[in-house]
Structure formats: structure tokens, C-alpha cells
Amino acid sequence: MSLTRKSFLNMVGAAALAIGSGTAAFAQEVTLNLHQFLPAQANVPKLVLDVWADNVEEASGGRIKVDRYPSMQLGGRPPELMDQAIDGVADIVWTVVGYTPGRYPSTEVFELPFMMTDARAMSSAYWQMFEKHMKDTEFKDVHILGTWVHGPGMIHTKDEVKTPADMEGLKIRGGSRTVNNLLEKMGATPVGMPVPAVPEGLSKGVIDGTTIPWEVTGALKVPELVGNHTEFEGNALYTLTFVLAMNKDRYDSLPDDLRQVIDDNSGLEFSIFAGGTQADSDGPAREFAVSNGNNIVTVSGADLDAWRAAAQPIYDEWVADMESKGIDGQALIDEARALMDAYEG
Image 1: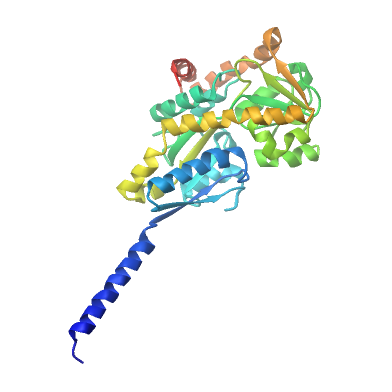
Image 2: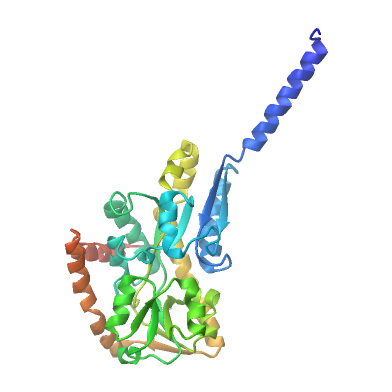
């Protein structure tokens, strides 16, 4: 059968249509899954992670799609998230570093009691020190996209807590080994549990209280489960460290221009945004507890002295522990403080 001009043109047209359709279908080149432990409506997923993912999608011109999996929907438990990123079970994870105690020891400098004054300043210091001290050592097996801390950590309890003596014998949930050590120094019994388990722990009496910042209390319904909240004037009692982490091979496999999109939306400025946004959400959550009729204790002035005195030994113990790991803990403390003092936000 001879190939007529008409049939040739028809074939060319069909080929062009196929190529065009293929191009449209191929426009979305990469789908990344983002796995984390909080409900989708909580502040961090809604105000930080979704913003990051939306910005990446938009900046890529739709070539990157980020599928979001809240509440551990891809399986596993929150302490397994870092390994999920390292092993490629998930492309990207957001997690509390303290869920893997002792594994990333340098990050604990930011969790020391009464260390933090401002979440943006500390998140900035955290990223700078990550790049200098941790990127090629403790975090060498994963690609870190952001490092930040939450706003001032505080205590939420069924019974009123004004002094360290009031903590004696209470079972309190802590979010990291540093916080658990702090609770022990106050005479409490620390209970390690990921934050999603807090509501059940409170309702069943497994714990008498929890340490979390204001901002996450709403998602966990804490003001409805306890009647007392203890906050601290000035430097925070504690804070926790977070990372947004990506599987290294997945990151390296991206085309150069899409890696650039990821880079442009990650790093120092994103870390400051994330920590600041989380801290900014404290106010509305606190207002809800007030409107709920809950009792809020603000420790201030001379009343802080007993709390600081109880916490002070943690510094010496932590520096000695870091020294046993070949890390100059006091130098990290001094550097973190200098970077926070220098922050001009």
C-alpha cells in the first residue's frame, strides 16, 4: 500500500498529537511524599509544611507534586520517621529530633533549659550551626531542608504547678531526653511518648501532665483535658528541635533545576520562617485556654530562681556527656548564645 501525501500528513499530525499529549502528561515529572505525625489541621502542617510544599509546587511550574501524609499515614511510629527518610520509605519527613534520643547529640544544645529567648533567633542559630557542625557528621545520611525550634516550652498539668516542689511525684510526658532529664531534676517522673499520644495518656491517667508549647495544645485538646498551665517569663523553660529531612538519593536524583527549586525554598530563611510561625501560633492557643476558664501560672521574678537552680546541673552533665562523645559542648553553648544575640530578624 502506497503512502499518500494525505496519509503521511495524517501520520505526522497523529505523531505530533502523541508527542503533545506525552509532554502534557510528563509535565509533572516528580511526585514526593511528605510524611509526619500530626493531624493535617494542626498548626505545623497547615502553616509551615503546606506552605513549603505549595511553594515548591508553584516554583517548579507544576513539575514537582508533594503528596502530604499526616498522622503517620504511611505507617510506622513517630520515632521511626528519621529512618524512613534515610531508608527511602518516605521522600521527606518532618520530625522531632528528640524522638531518637542521643542520635543527634549536637542539636541538644538548643534544648537546654532556659536557653531560648526567641524562636526565630534560635532557629537561625540552629541552621548556621547545623551547616558548620552537623551536616557532614551527625546528619550525613540524610538531606536536611530545614532546622527549627518551637516557641517557649511549658508545663500543662491536672494539678496546679508553681514551684519545682509541686512537680514531685507527677508523671509528666517529655519530648526529648534533655526534657526528661529536666523533669527528673524537678522531682517528676518523665514519661517518654510522642505528642500524638498525649490526649489518650491524659484521659486515661497514664500521665498527670505534659510539656508542650501553647501552639499544639489546641490540636491535642489539652486545655479540655487539664485545668492548669505553667509558663515562664523571659527565657523559655525548654524547647524542642525539629528537622525537615529528605532522602539523600531522592534529592540527588532530581534534575539540577528541580534541585534548585528545593534549595531555594529550604535553608536558613525557611528555618526562621518555620520557627517563627510556630511560635506565633502560641498566642491564639493561649487565648483559648483563658476563654476556657483554665488556670495559668506565670513564673516570674524571684520565683524563677528555684527553677533555674534545679535545672543548672543539666548544663554540667550535658557538657561532660558531649565530651565523652568527642564534642566540645561548652563551645556549642557559647556559639549558640552568640548567634542568638547577633540575630537581628
